[in-house]
Image 1: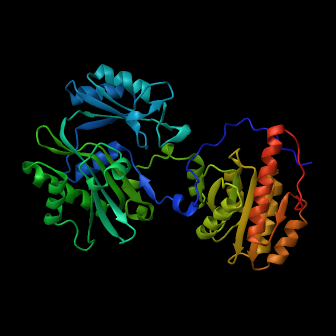
Image 2 (image 1 turned 180 degrees about the horizontal axis):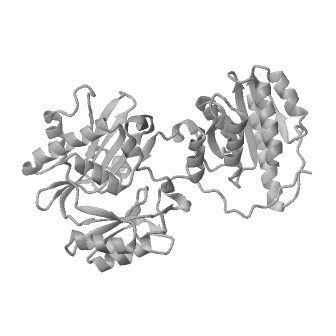
Image 3 (image 1 turned 180 degrees about the vertical axis):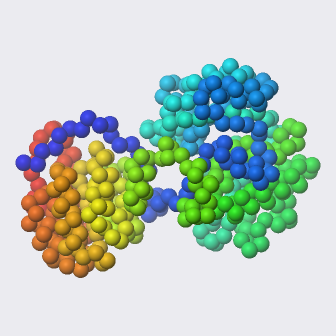
Length: 442
């Protein structure tokens, strides 16, 4: 009898929405995101204007920082890698991850309510993200607020500057409601941002005449950061012209290409893994490409393209994938074990689909490793196994004679359909808390 007990763990929370088609909604992340205070520090080294501010990692330090900044008009910002902090809510009920403060005492008071607590925003989902520090900076009053971002445009394979006169708002909202307010300027990577391009963008945005040169210089310096630091995104929102006619980056979101880690060691030393999914961090340590999704069929695949196809065919058969997991070309027993650990850490998972092409490693060797890991881990979830390539017939024989709840199916469509069927049965069994026995002839 195949018995499924109820899990006492809270359901795994959504890291990505899974909507059809998968190919348009699910892409592997290839960038590092850093905290706002680090972004401001980096921009400052390039001579880019930012409000005066410092980070604090305790309430007492926040009070000290506020005293050092001076004045009676400051802002305290929770350092959480998520958008919408100002409208977020902490797990202790505090509303807003960005607050105006008027004294060092208030800085300490709000820091006590932010540091060590989780902030929930529209981007964190129900899991929230821990706040380990706060950024306290002087409050500047803007005469005008703009949006400016530098990105890589895949269609032209070149950088593009996206700007809008409507700063301080979600760019998605602006694009939807006022598309004419968005200015896109392709940049020739061999030429860069010329004075003419910089002035044109500054003028079109609406900077006052006396700030055009400063704005042009700021745009050029931001592009310099983008190019020299291997950034995938530099987003300034808002880019402001203050009441005393300074051009300042009030808030900055910077992302960097993981492939450039070897030459951007300092920047990648700023990585904050507390802001990332623990399982995804663990997967990266073992060379696995893993991203949690919100479905219930675990996927273990070798090759990113095959992984995408596997998730697509699960969706086409009415199921929902619980993860993207690419174990790479080797698919060694150790990699398979770590992959199963990651998959089974999610209590929502009701079935596992193993789809591996045995080219570098023979299918029978993969099957032996798979059987060993399943037996050693005492896995009780039904596992549909599709091994294609060298010695695939031998692999199927090993799997089918293993005596374990592993089912070898050669055809991709049949395998995906069976994984979905198994998943449905397990979910029903969990709902009524009964045991269930599996066979291919459901």
